Image (cartoon, rainbow, N blue to C red; front, side, top):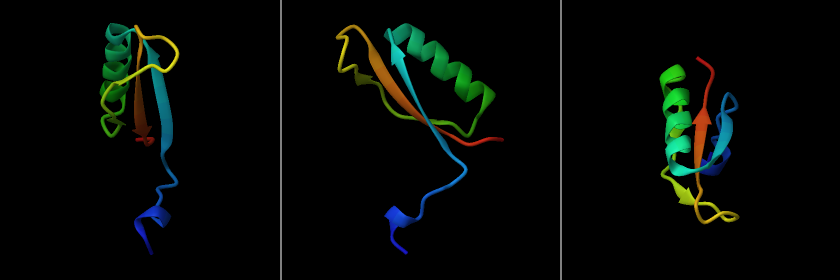
Length: 61
C-alpha cells in the first residue's frame, strides 16, 4: 500500500481564511478544543492580499 492510499477516514479538512490576527485566534481556539488538530503554516489568500489561509486536519476526539 502506498502513502497515497493510506488515507485516514476519520479526518475533516478545514480551511480558515481571514485577517492574520483573526485566523490565529480561530486556529488557537480549534487546536485548544481539539489538540489533535494539525494546522498548516499560513499561506497568502488568493483573493485578498490582506488575508491569509490556514488548513487544518481535524479528527474527532
